[in-house]
Length: 153
Ligand code: RB5
Image (cartoon, rainbow, N blue to C red; front, top):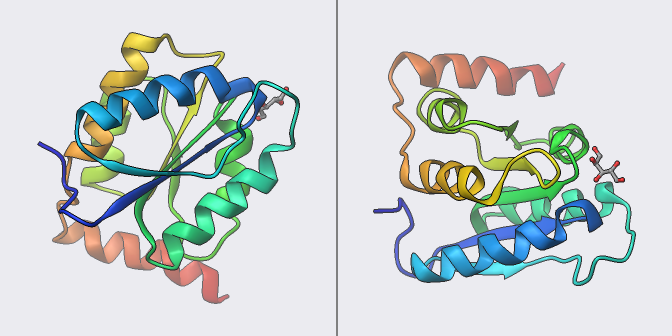
């Protein structure tokens, strides 16, 4: 059961290194009845990941999307770029434990995946945990607030 309410959307984007996995994740999210806005790329032709990271990040910080998913070859370039946008907490995950706890403890709002790192099965389990797990709040809210305060320095 996902944390998405009716009318809420998820923003997704990838570069050429994540294109095939993005298509599979979009299919998976459709089966979970989560509405997705696709910011590209739309083929396996080479593109620059920061351009896509910025589009998905803007969608999340504007409130258009509740959460985002970004996929490149490693997930790292996308996370570096997305975390430059104020309001973004992007987490690159390649196993399920981190995917669960980055929602519970960090209130991560963008999941980054490596299309050349994770297999399809693990990727779908990571996606499920990311979209199904609520933020725990409590003492973690104070820590997340402290992280976001760093943007004001
Ligand atoms: C593109 O070849 C690759 O560098 C990119 O997908 C990503 O892995 C960057 O972090």
